[in-house]
Image (cartoon, rainbow, N blue to C red; front, side, top):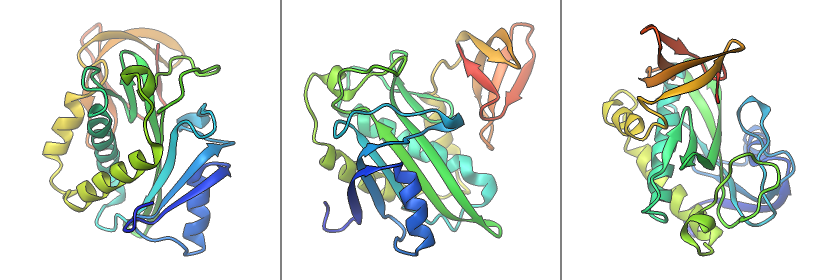
Length: 246
């Protein structure tokens, strides 16, 4: 544990986001507090998806922040900031394996999932009161039974990594980036996010409204919708959870 950071390491929890919510209600945490667990019984991602992780082998944690200068309409800026900073950080351990951001915030290497996030917000008035940034990174696990397409840092770099150190290093990196990011000047961040976007400008198959269709990703909008160009040239915009990658 860092002498500066408030990192609370627990053994087994339902999910670190759940614990973070409880501590926020109890007013026992503040901006920058971190909840980390060796194992989650109900680790989850978007759409209720579960997160497979052997006990003590991966980095499972939640960072609590108070983005009071962010409007509710600017939630996607935080999503981009977390995605870009985590991708940049993990890239230093696997420089020969480019990391891509699968919209909105999964990290992929060669079509395999390395990390995922679940970011939850509490809105008070016209600002974001609290944001809980739940992150799962496959670090030292080398065998997966349930996940369809996982990969870990250990598989990619052929060495075991110190999870405590990874947690401290990334939290410091993210909090520094957060403090130096102006939510009303998002152009540079948006460019970095789009430069790393998974399957950008590639014709791929998606499941939309129960039908398979081919389209290419052109980018995202400021509010986080995915921009797809279909075979007939039409450009449509999709909300989170409205389409599925195939």
